[in-house]
Length: 412
Ligand SMILES: *Cc1c(COP(=O)(O)O)cnc(C)c1O
Image 1 (cartoon, rainbow, N blue to C red):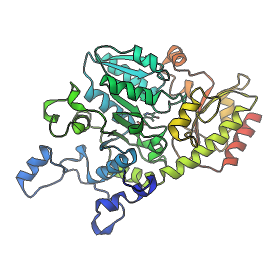
Image 2: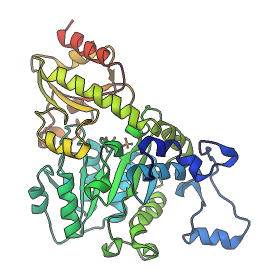
Image 3: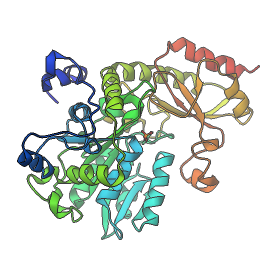
Image 4: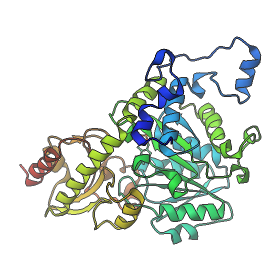
């Protein structure tokens, strides 16, 4: 990042990159193909010179967003994808091969859990561990281990893995450390500060922030020496080894899977990103207020929120996130005296929808929706109870959120 702060940097990023006609936004580039007057120049771009060829591999608009994400993360380079899942899939499928081993936190987003299942069907061994405990991560090490994966704040249980401990151990072991930073966002915690090699962000969530565009990104922090990684293909073992991993994710990921971010979505996400810090600050404050209110309520069994002193990794979260803000996601287990569906139907302000990181507060009964397919055993391993609600807190006026819970808990 430049010497400017988080928000200043994002606001002025396009302008500083040089925008035609003095525009303050990078324009929307809908062109599918990019033409060259000189055939040698065209060939050079295909052979690695920076430039654009076919929009599946990126456009000036997606590149401008990638530059913003790189600056937010303090990394060296980023590549964008159509969704966060596409970013994760590209990372795993382009860097891992049959016979390799991946250690993953067991507390992860349900769709990522599904992706790891697909990966293991294709011959990559996956071990799920409780990554809040570094000893469990270490104990899973095999000779063929290549990569460790965790989320910064786990969706939906809010567990916080030993992010720094994993970073240090991966560095000692020469392992690639992939951090899904979607729930913390780089505003709360940057992957580079915990030793991550690659940071994945679902841009559909807080970065875009308005529920009107999907996207994902992978950022290389520059900490990993890719010359030590066996799975980099020959054409990408060129130039500074710091860039090899991301080059392979970008080249192969966009080409082989084709889940490219559109210029239109990139533009919307870039505009949303301008207010990321402001939204996170308000949503985190709302989440803290709501968590404190719900924790004391007789009809609530348990509230999992990293800002509460009762959270198992509260001190770690305070250390990682600076002690003031703890993100905007709550996991709330209702009392068995409440019918979860009846309760949800009484809410008037909260939106019953499966998304998070929106400006609006969204709520979802996870065992019956996004975790339904995986069955009760796997849900138990991940700490998902039948009456668990995931609440993605938005930026509404705080009193309105508390009042909505008050009336819905009171019933009738
Ligand atoms: C939503 C989410 C994803 C996937 O992002 P999409 O853009 O919805 O594909 C990945 N990881 C986490 C932690 C998420 O919450």
